Image 1 (cartoon, rainbow over the protein chains, first blue to last red):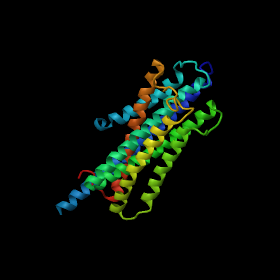
Image 2: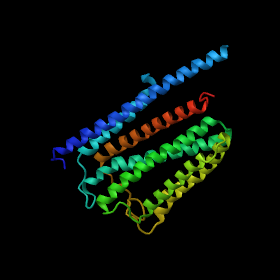
Image 3: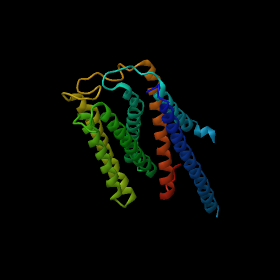
Image 4: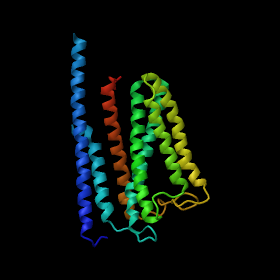
Length: 49
Length: 222
């Protein structure tokens, strides 16, 4: 298995797929943070009024 | 930003390490399982993540029943859904492993049947939650059910397979545990892999909880 060159292709493809999923999670996390920030500002504004 | 992100980055890095190291390190030459032993890094780690998630859901269900705060219900239900996700991945990776070692995707093994029953118990939790419209009622009933579901998980995955006369799984039915005889090199990949999947599971849980809190208008700071 180790001697087969295709073996490294599997590792590279799996790593790329996983890195992509990780990046996707980061994007969702950042989007949520932005929405939470907006909502907090809106709540504070409403409370002030 | 990095301050609150370090554990998420650590989770991703540990899993990436386990993918690369898990497929490149030398593993002991064992009969029957041969190179498929590498699946231990992924299959068992995912089960660990599932157990941690379902344990977390139990803690938050009990917490909800003692304080009736909706944010605890969000954590409990989110942890169950994340646990189901990792349980499904654990079942799939286990089925593939079984095909290449035992010759079939599913065998009549107490551990496999226990895993299937436990997953069904948690799927029933999801259906139960979906069938109740009123938020407080849904939270209260599902918290009580969740405690029973966790007891089923412990019985079907932790107790009954160990009491069985025979099992194909290590550590069950009188077999010696894989962890006892695990190669030291494999431990260097297995432990980081388990920790990485657990951290990513908590990240998924956090995302789920924050999203539900925004949709339902639940204040997580109260």
